[in-house]
Length: 192
Image (cartoon, rainbow, N blue to C red):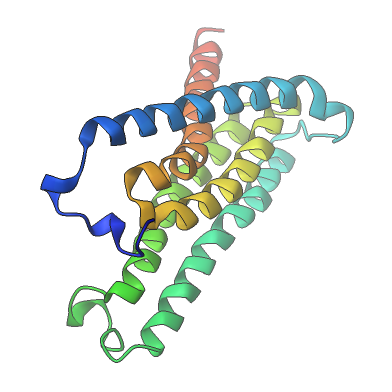
């Protein structure tokens, strides 16, 4: 049975091989899910959604999609600020010292979510600047995976790296794959 603090195991109690296998398994699941979702969305979502083709409309689409990602940052900020207000150990803020056990996971969630959101929003803007139509379906997939990934990341955090791995990879892989698409489109534009 897991305790609330298994993520705080001392290094000598961590089995890196088990953790690495769990992370690789989560990464494989997330990669396959992303590729299937990206391909399916690219070829199928345009039958349901009329994606914009003009530059200003594409950028507006990316900005609106970014709101759905940035809402997760807002959720993290609210979790941390509420946690600070309810804890004498944390009321002094981050400058007063490290977060208490009750706030640590929320603070880690906020930090990681902020990092992931900045990268995702950059991908959205880059893709929208270069392409329209069915390419914008990739942004829709990334937004959904971001939400699912954030939930799984937070819920799995107490279990350590293997517990948060699927959430992390579901959040991160659409952005990594998205940047590869953006770079490919950029090279095609420069060479074409």
